[in-house]
Each structure stands twice: as structure tokens, then as C-alpha cells.
Amino acid sequence: GELKEKAARIDELEALRAKQAKKVAQLQELLRAQKEKCLRDLEEQAKKIAQLEALRAKQAKKIAQLEKLLRAQK
Image 1 (cartoon, one colour):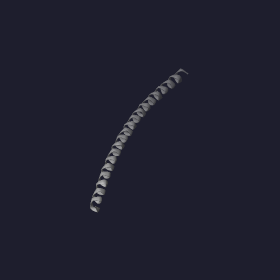
Image 2 (cartoon, rainbow, N blue to C red):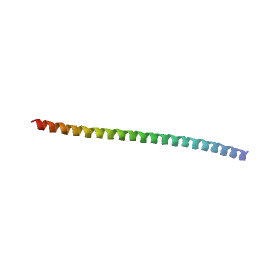
Image 3 (cartoon, rainbow, N blue to C red):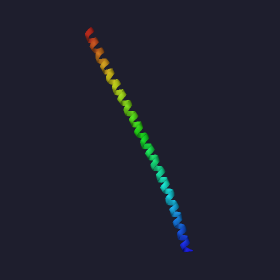
Image 4 (cartoon, one colour):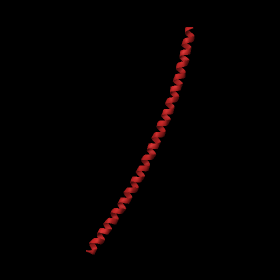
């Protein structure tokens, strides 16, 4: 009897370990997917920032031209 109980207990623990390993794998996959999404979002934000910087530079150039025109008219 005692040996059978020990064997059953070992089987239970093995099943539990397998279940936990599966859960860990699922969580690792979830983390990987979240990390990828964060990186994509960051790349998108970096692109938008670069676009805004370019726009700002263009506007600054335009403002400088307008100021030059105004000074010329005085």
C-alpha cells in the first residue's frame, strides 16, 4: 500500500509540474508578444516625433523667411 501511495503521489506531482511548465510557457509567450507590441508602439512614436521635428524645422524656416520679408518692407 505505501509504495502505491508514493507512486500515486509522484504521478500527481509530475502532472502538477507539467501543468505549471505549460503555464510558464504561456506566460513567456504573452510577455514576448507584449514586448513586441511595446517595441512597435515605440517605433511608431519615434516616427511621429521625427515627422513633427521635420515639420517644426520647415515652419521655423518659413517664419525666418517671413521675418526677412517684413524687415525688407520697413
